[in-house]
Amino acid sequence: MFGRFVLIRMPHWSYSEMKEAFGFDVDQYIYFGGYPGSAMYVGDERRWSKYIKDSIVAPAIEKDVLWTKTVYKPALIRQLFELGCAYSSEELSLNKMLGQLQDAGNVTTLSGYLTTLDESRLLCGLMKYASDKARKYNSVPKLIVYNTALFSVQSGMTFKAAFTTPKLWGRWVESAVGAHLLNQADEYDYKLYYWREKEDEVDFVIEYNKQCIAIEVKSGRKTTNEGLPKFVEKFNPVHSFIVGSGGIPVEEFLTWDIGNLLE
Image (tube, rainbow, N blue to C red; front, side, top):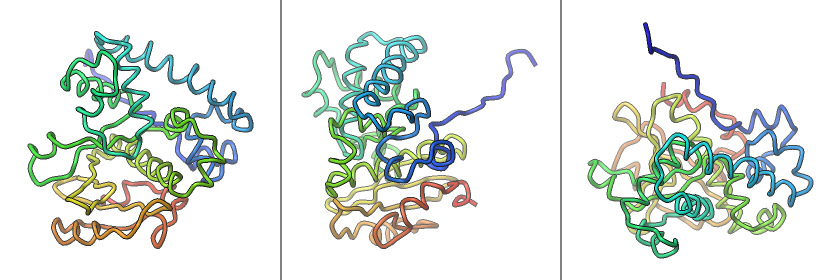
């Protein structure tokens, strides 16, 4: 039995946990995220932001990541993290990232560092859903933070400014939905993707046991999108639904146990 172990996963705190422990409403959770240590500072956003950067981000990048992985360019992985968080819920090619980062090396280096950030449960680059693996791995990544606090501190926007700008708030809502899905992926052993063909898109696709579930997030920044019905027609998912306007309320979805969808 030597060397065997049981892996106990501890994802970022969920909306239900932050609501029960600290009285967060759904909009506070979407912006301030799920770091319990930061909850006491949400009334002072400057102090909250410094706490996230100094007590969460800096130790995670400068200690946790570097102690568990060989990183030849620590400054680059920090820059990639900051850039990726700022683009959460957006698609951004590795080549475009190269143009915005100093001493970025090559696409292979960035891809490896993005994988490291994903393994550290900080930032994920979702691949595009496709019927063959080659198209998945060669796709433009869609960036999603594991905790929306990481997006908020890189956005440079206050809670009030973000919340009262519907077009921008939509990015927070989509990031929160994505983070909720990412944080349960290990527990329930599913893969998370996005899908796009020309102007048609589906924000999130869960793949498990050779089946899929399609989830579209509708918020202030979204216009009419025919992506979901076209995806249903092409891939025949076992479930397809909208989170947000005209669908399942965001607050309700953020309390869901995703495992129930996979039964």
